[in-house]
Length: 307
Image 1 (tube, one colour):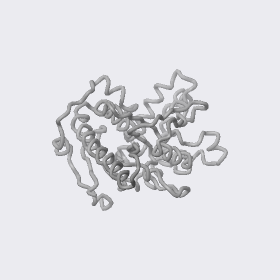
Image 2 (cartoon, rainbow, N blue to C red):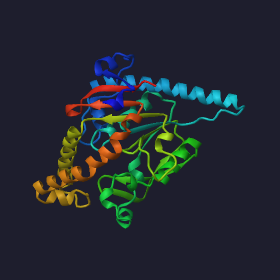
Image 3 (cartoon, rainbow, N blue to C red):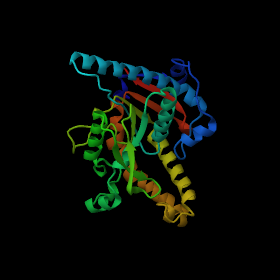
Image 4 (cartoon, rainbow, N blue to C red):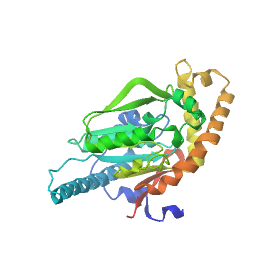
């Protein structure tokens, strides 16, 4: 892949051997609570992939903090603590939510003096009524369906050290923004931002989400595998929605199963796959690190940018 020539590629055993001085502070039960719906991850993968990654991030954060002190000293200013922002991108159904949650839990354990918080860019999707009003409901997930101005303003406030910032909350159960519900972000030392658009270059803004991120991760897999996981997740969601009329998937769950799966396949082919090919996958080579997954969500390679 020519777009990845500026990465060092490591098979999982090689990556694992870079750092094994710490053990996984999780049980299989607690890991199950972290992983995203219908995703798969083992304690062995946490040990082999995420423990070295946490150590690498600790080195990066130390270097980042030192630079803030050096810059303040050069400017003869009192040092100001600047939050370190980690961006996590990738397709729908690829497992980026699991990566984000796992990093949050591991960082809270290994960096006990640091305040670590997590937000998803789903909270900056326009509400369904707004998407309908704009005539872009069928473009949900594409760049124009996000309130990028508000997302950029939020990241600006985080970097500026604003004490209490509110973020809209998105529910995958109702497939919409929840009115009058917000997430409070309170001066984090480390902020993890997860979403399909964290590496994108929106045409509507002069600055980008990636302008604020200090380390970025792209969770990668072949499109045909992601489609398989997308359909498996959809089928599993139908079972959960069967007795819940308020669930977005209830109508699909109580109708003909074959029709529901056909609708999911159409959604993938007409929305999610074009979005992946046109707007998400082209951002992969902007990431600092790529986590590549093969069959059964098993991580097989880690790619680290050379510069």
